Image (cartoon, rainbow, N blue to C red; front, side, top):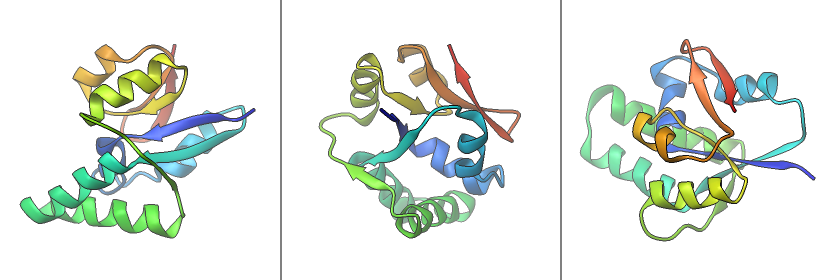
Length: 124
């Protein structure tokens, strides 16, 4: 059975901000089958950033959305606050990839994060 990896908004924003191929970094970091998914709430956050922000944030959100579309990443329905929902999924054993310091404190280990702006690691 493959692990489900849920991509958080700021991990997707890191693609442009860190010039990091998050998908290749996950591939190198995982030694078991996995499925990448994104919450519909994360898509909403990215669209909101595109509308409300300027400069690199707007560009990062736009790039993340186009990559998710091009790679046909599966979209999963979420309800309520995105971070709260990610914590719930984490407690059910799903892996969350995030850069959010406050969210990482709430997640159940293991989870994934980006280190040194160039690799994805599993925090256990």
